[in-house]
Length: 441
Image (cartoon, rainbow, N blue to C red; front, side, top):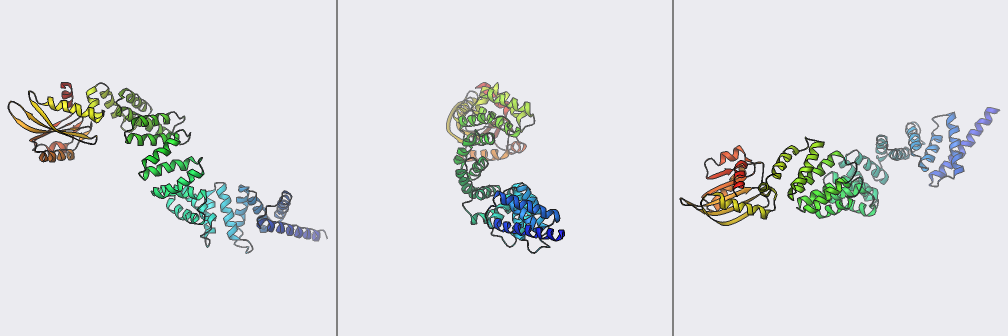
């Protein structure tokens, strides 16, 4: 008698569970009392049978509706193991919800498995494509991410999350123009998304739009997370454009941040030292290089830069030769030309410069014993000058009908360069000889 009454009670209880469950799946959230009744009834049913698919479905539905993601993921995971033997279960819905719940708790492996299964036969569903796409971005499978997110974007072009991840994926696969249009929308709609804004600046840089990139990076210089990198990027662009005042400000702002990653800290100081050198602030450059050497003596070419900068600090003429503005450099070169040959009359007939790399000075030289046209090339380098520079100089002497040529640098010459001039009327003046010339003038 008691057993029969118990069976009837359980049947009535499950009927109530299924009825409320259907209301929940219709889109209406159960009231608190309904929820409590559902959970209690389902748990009692599961106490009788831990694999009760209907009771598990009710619990999973309640947890999902209430956004209790860990419980929802765990319960839907149990249901995925029952779909093969229970045709009444909605396999697609279970896989979708298990995948979405797993995304919320950052269980990307299980999310990926369930959403991939759910996508079979449902390739145009927005939620599946968007979430699989963002998982692929996190896994750095950017090509795959673009395909999924593009499908999601076609469904909902107004969805900010899709634009964000699709823009980032486009940037990662070296398609900055597509990235810019999407990330710009994200930046306008979500100004607190500093990661996307920083990537927008990088996309502008990759697309060759330096002015826009500088504006973005300048805007981010004060940000605690992206400020140091943004200051480094802004300063590097200003340094490349020879806007040294702005570059110095950028690097100094970047260095004010606490807790800068070591690689960013060292690069900020390295670029700031280069900026000081370009402005002929040798003592400041030396101070930054010494600090880098204290932190990491093997960083880039800091040891060589230190030796070079210390030498510059004690040689004003060498500073002018290597790092002064072009007008000062040309003035120094003119003095060298007019004083190069002893007891001579020199008439400079032409001066031409190749950006900031070298200056050619053509002069008519007259001495008591000979007269000739001489082409001087002053190379602004303290490293080895190669054969190509000498070949170009030789061709230039032919064009201007110079009888001889001289190549002067603050470094040395490669073996190929030395071999090239052996049978040609070109003299090579290296750093040692240049020092003597500088003392003379």
